[in-house]
Structures are given as structure tokens and as C-alpha cells.
Amino acid sequence: MSLNRLLRGLGVFPVSLGLGLFTVPVVEARDWNQYSVCVTQLQKFNVSGDNAAIACSDALIPKELSECVSMIGNATPIDGNNSVNACFQVRRPIDLGNCVADIYNAVPSLATVDPDTDTEEINLLTLLNSCRTSSRPGFYSECVIATAREVTDMDPIRAMDICLSAQDFPRSLFPAYNE
Image 1 (cartoon, rainbow, N blue to C red):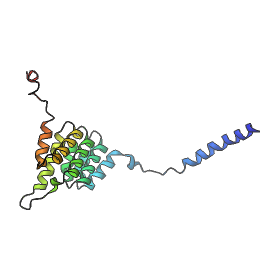
Image 2 (cartoon, rainbow, N blue to C red):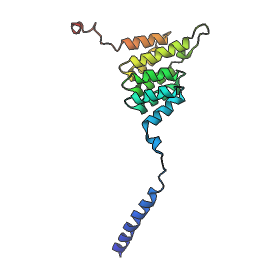
Image 3 (cartoon, helix red, strand yellow):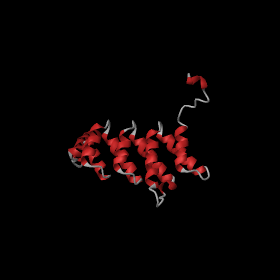
Image 4 (cartoon, rainbow, N blue to C red):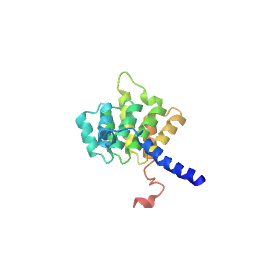
């Protein structure tokens, strides 16, 4: 009797599993194409279709390029074209996007605007370029955030310079390495 019940249970299982497969949503082929995703995302941040197509086709991993631009575009007012150029020039675009977004959100004085000059744009481009130049964007953003917060009257641009120069090999500590 228990064998009969077991066999009936096994027979029902494949039927219920098979019916479950029909509930999977149908996804269009273009949704799986990382180049399509990349171009679409870049265009959302005012990158022209031609520039988006060129950037995505040349990118090593197009989804990471577009994710980097999206992270920067969602967190800052940085122009999409500037973001594409920076994200394209690094090995780890996601780290660059995190670096820019983290510093911008944590250091409010970066967004201050001087009515006589376009200070905000200069600060934002400096932020973008310093994160791009950094060899370790995650540690760099932590350094900038801590330095700007903890040191009284520290200009955020000065904090970026200090943290960027700290990543260089300390030749003064190891003079024999200079040879």
C-alpha cells in the first residue's frame, strides 16, 4: 500500500514541475543583449546614440560601462558624456562609479556653487578624474570622506589631492627603492 502511494507521488511530481515551467515570463532577446542594455542606459544620461554605440561596442564589458555611467548619473549632476569617458578609461568601471557616488553623497561641500564661477562643475570634474586616476577607488573614497569630515576646515579638493598622493609609493621611506 505504501509503495502504491509512493509511485503515485512520483508520478504527480514531474507533472507539477512541468506545469511550473509554463509560468516563467517570456523575455525578449534584446533584454539579454548587453550591448542593447548599454546603449539604452547611456542614452538615458544624454549620451548621443552614436557615442553610446561606439562606447558600448568598444567596451570590454558593456554592462559594466553603462552601470558605471548610471551610478554616476543617478548620484551626481555630472554630464553623461564625461562619465562615459571616465568609465571607459578604467579597468573596473563599477568601482569608479561607487567612488564618485560615495564621495559626492558624503561630502556636501562639493556641490556648493559660487555664482561668479562654475565651481560646482570644476569640483565634479576633479572628483571624476581623481576617482579615475586612483589605483584603488574604494579605499580612495574612504580616505577622501574621512579626511574631509574629520579635518577641520579641509577643502574637499585638498582632501582628494592628499588621498591621491598617498597612493604613490612612499619613496622617502624606502630610498633604496629609488635606484
